[in-house]
Length: 355
Image (tube, rainbow, N blue to C red):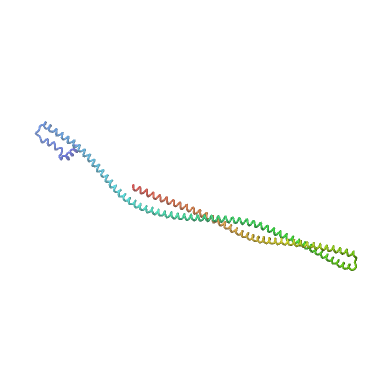
């Protein structure tokens, strides 16, 4: 410790501490008391100097420690400054990279947005086309259904008309049977009337022949007959004439009756013939209409089946279109979500780099 103090004092004073007593020995002519008296203040001065030196040494040591600490802090600050400068350079480079990434991200964002807008426009156009097609198909289906209902009503009407014509056909067959019976009965009646007329004419001829015989008898009796015979012959003649007159009247009645019945029968036959002709014509028309209705019914059934198949195909196509629309909406939703995720990721990356 003293050696270090000596060295400190030597550094402070520029002289060695050991040389100080030599100065006192050089004063050999002094007494011991004088030497004591004179050495006491010198020792006191040395002690003060030593304490002062120790204080200065402590201050110097503290100053050195502070200096070392300051040097260490300076080195740390210098290292931190270099590190901060390096970090600054890195941050500037990262900022440049980030700016370039932002530019690239903005370009990608613009491209994605443009592509998204194109996809959305295409999807909107496709959806609009599909909606228009669906509306057209729905209207066409409604028209088909209306046409189908009209065709079904026509088929039902034709079936009713066919049933009515079948009833008319049975009625016409009954009319034909009645006409045949009437013709048969009129033929029988006509034959009977002819037989009656022939009998009346035969009786008339018989009466005429008897009258002729009576005329001849009268001529014979006129020459030589009595009054009684003449009277009897006249009475018989009157009776025969009366009978002849009655026969004429009866024959006239028969002729009149036969003529009336014949006329009535002919009128009825003509009426029935005309009615049968009309019914036959109507039957032929009904048969032709029935054939046409049957053909029309077949055609309507074919068109109905075709319409049903078309409606089924249209329903399937509408279902497929609906599925395509759902897929397009799902793809659009996924594209939006992916775009939002990319934007969120780029924003978070930008925020983290800025920090």
